[in-house]
Image (cartoon, rainbow, N blue to C red; front, side, top):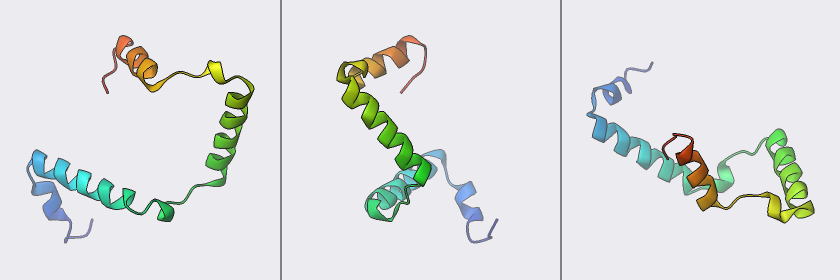
Length: 75
């Protein structure tokens, strides 16, 4: 690892989390620069076709969160 980044590991947990949040915000501010791979495009197309064939087959975000929480996972 580059010595210029080793100080990151010395940060307090709260500072590391803030750094991660800042990095994600920076990445999210330019979504057009994030590459989408061919297999990802194919999967999105497959899911869209499946949804268009049967729109009621999906779950709302609220229902999905509830199902995950019921299974013992935390989000």
